[in-house]
Length: 276
Image 1 (cartoon, one colour):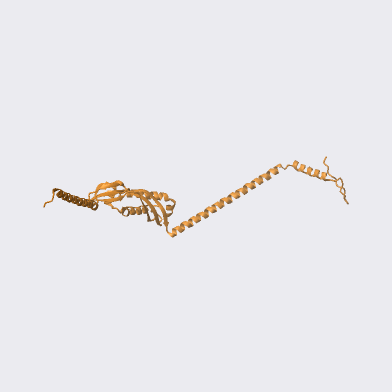
Image 2 (image 1 turned 90 degrees about the vertical axis):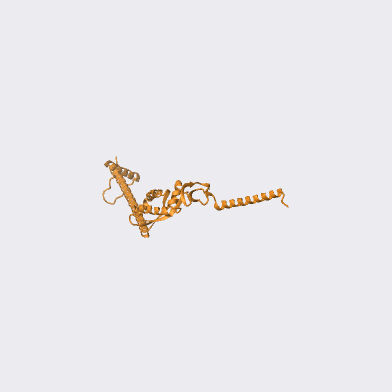
């Protein structure tokens, strides 16, 4: 007995549904397996490769569609990077010096594909490190070890300019450069300390000498003042003043006399000089 038309229709629908389910599952599997979408995170750019060849197209931040199998997206960090490293150099007076430096840099946004193609993702080791070493060596050779200390800001600025000009050729932008510290040989460090000590002693001696000179000048001025005072006193003493002083002394003697004449046993009686 043959099936009813309704049953046949139900079987057909079930068959088609199963087919659609299978096709959908395959599509989902392919979507996840082939991964046609790519997300470029903040602070990055996407370099597009077509069968391994770098294209001119650069992907910005966000979600992008790519052709599975054909296209590969390489994510390049375009944020400011901080590099802290050590560079060894010889000064003008042949002192071995170790520089500890800090460098802030970033890659040019519109040239990330060129950097990836010409240098690769390891541009820090390939380009930046060698240029830092070369810049430090070239500038340090222009200064003595002592000048590196006394002209630190000037030396830092020169290294920055050399490094900036050298790295821009590779589409790498230097935002900031600074010398964190210097390290010299033990002998040179000791010599610097001894020199500073000698300067301090010399300064103290100079200050002591200045103090002694000031004290001596003060004594001279004091002596001059005393001499002037004595001279003024001598000018004021006249014969009349001397005679007046004698009279005043005699008057004081009379005031103190009790009216009795002194008794003498021999010789004439002395006369009392009475002022009329």
